[in-house]
Image 1 (cartoon, rainbow, N blue to C red):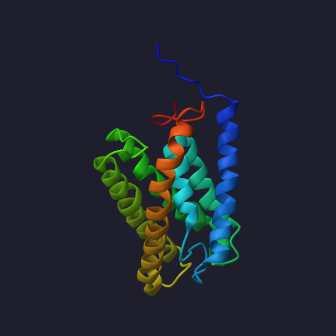
Image 2 (cartoon, rainbow, N blue to C red):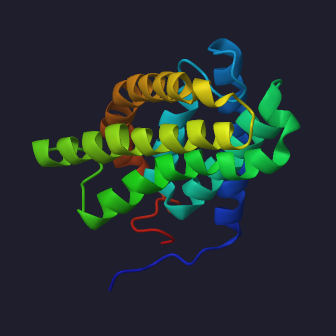
Image 3 (tube, one colour):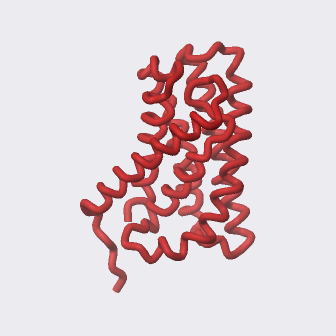
Length: 197
C-alpha cells in the first residue's frame, strides 16, 4: 500500500523557507545583473531555482516563486516597480507562469525528473526552458508597459533581455540540478510527486 504524506506544518515551513530563499535570490540577481529596469535582470538565476523548487516541491514551490518574485524583485527592489505595488501584484504572475508551465507539463507527460532519456530532456527543455520563459517574459514586459512602469517603446527590449537571460540560466542550471539532486530529494518526505502530495 502506497503511503501518501498529508500536508502538515512541515510544508508550511518548507514554503516559508522557499519564499525567503527566492526573495534573497531575486534580490541578488537584481543587484548583480541589473538592466536599469526595476525587477528585470540580464541574468536572473533565481528563476532556475524557482523552477527546481516547483518541480521538487509542487505547488508549494509555485507559491514560493510568486511570493519571491513579488517581494524580492518587486516590492523590495530599488527601482520603479517598487513604487507601483499595484502593478507588482500582477507583474509577479510572470514568476508564477514560469514555474507552473513546466510543473503542469512535466506532471502531465509523466517526466522522470532524473532525466534519464532524451524524451524527458526534450520535454524539459521545451516546457521548462523555452515556452515558460517566453510566456513569463511576455507577461512581465507587457504588464510593466501596461502599468506605466516602462514606456511602451521599451516592452520589446525588456522582453528580449528577460527572455535571453532566463533561457541562459535555466538551460545551464535546471537540467544539471535535476540530474544531480533529484534522486536524493525524491527520498525526502518533502518531495511532492504531483501538485500537493
